[in-house]
Length: 253
Image (cartoon, rainbow, N blue to C red; front, top):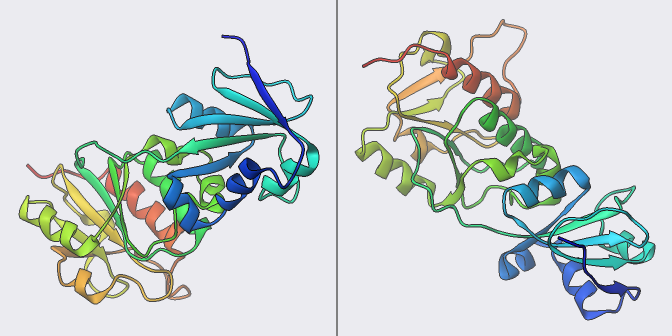
């Protein structure tokens, strides 16, 4: 399909450019159900997974995909970019609600606030075969540009749902999903866990961990054995270790 050039946007006062810039705010992203990605890699990932709605290219950039494509000047591109050194390619993407059934291997995140941690966790979840990610309503927005960059596009490859987490955990527990919550002291060494084919792993806030009301739902507690020199791990690192360990542990019948 040939690339069709609809417009060259030159003014920062253009209503469309003003609207696109507002997508840097969580409120406007939620209102419009759209978000921006920057750079060829993320744009291609968004296109291949059906998220990409429109391309914005710096004038004279040679790049094409079979979607609506418009050009912008360097000054407009800089206004729309969240990067210190803007990419010449920006994608306008649509949010897609996950309609898939919750899978067997579920990762539940309670109040994760740091975009870098969220991105790391999403990448690890894809790498270690998590089927579904559940987010509490007060987690960082996954369409935050820092989160998207930290996922390296893997955000587009796993079903993610924002939900009332306590209610969802109780619902899954009723469906015989064991609920595993991390605990620094006490619980089972993750290396010695015998899992069912389906389970939920709950990870908590960077500073305060998993909320007590979620702790009380737990079927069991897990911990990562460490030497006495280290009291705790970053939640992104801890989640990655746990998912790796759980991926290859023995399954009970």
